[in-house]
Length: 390
Ligand SMILES: [Ca+2]
Image (cartoon, rainbow, N blue to C red; front, top):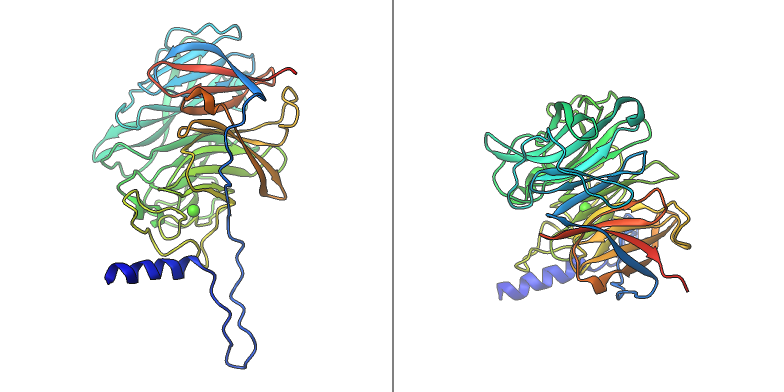
C-alpha cells in the first residue's frame, strides 16, 4: 500500500497543478515557470559527416584544445599532456604536469589556453588532486614552453576534499573579460552539498587567472563562497561560451533521465538535488519533483540520458548548416550531439557518429573549421569530423 501511495504521489507531482478557485471566486492561476523541453531522442543520422583518425594510441583522452598556431593540446586522464601537430604527430608527454589522482573518474581532466597566450604562453589544467580527506578538483596554471610546463602554480582547489572517485566536473571556460569559469561536480556521494554555499561541491566558480574571486561575483560577502557563480549543479562536464551573447552554457550529467542543458546565470540555483528530471539508478525518486519556485529550470533535458562530455559552439564555415549549433559529446550511447537554437531554446537535435560505437569525451572546432573529437578508451583517438561530399 505504501508503494501505491508513493506512486500516486509521484504521478501527482509530475502533472500540472489543476486550476482551483481562489477566495474571491476568480480562477487561480499558479505562478508560471517555463518548464524545460525534453529531448525527442532522435536516432543516429548517417551519411552527413565522416570521421577520420588524426591520431590514436591515447589512453583515456579527456580534452582537446587548439593553440593559436594550429597545434592542439590533448590531455590523457592518467596524467599526461601531449601536443598534437597539424599533421597529426603526437609529442612525448609534456613534462612538469602536476601529480594527479588517477582513480575512478579522476585524473588529468581539462585544459584551457590563456586568452593572452601569444604574450604569456600560459595554460590551465584541471585535475583530481588527492589530499587530506580524499580528493577534489584543482586548477593549476603554468607556462608552456612547447615541451614542458614551468612556473606551475595551483590557483584553485575545490574544498573540502572528500572520498569517492566520481563527479569532479572540471571543465574550464574563459569569459570575454578573461575570467575563468570552473565547473565543480558534487563528488557523487555528497549531493546535498550542491545546495550548501560553504562547500565546493556542485558549483560553478568564476575566478581570475590567479584564482581570486572578482568583486562582482554574487556571494562575495558569504564565507567560503566568494568564488561561486552558480550552484545546485550535479556534475557539469560540458561548458562553452555563446559566441554572440558571451553567456556561459553548460550540460551536466543528471541521474537516470536527468541530463540538463543550462545557461547558468549569476548567483542562481540550478536545483540539484531538490529538483531534477532524473531518478536514482535504483528507480527511487530524488528530491521534491521537477520544478520549484526559486530554482532554475534547465533549458532542455535528456531522458534517456546522453552522458554528456565536452561541448563547443560551431561558428566556422566548413560544415554548412551547423553554424550557431551547440555540439556536445555523448559518452553513452556514444554520439556527437548537435543542438540548433532559436531565442534561447533548443529547436532541433541531431545525432551523428553513433555507428562508431565510441564514447565521445570532448569536442573542439579546429582552425580548419572541421570538428575534432576525442574518444574515451584505452586506445583513444582524435577524430576529424568532415562533411560527406555529395
Ligand atoms: Ca538542474
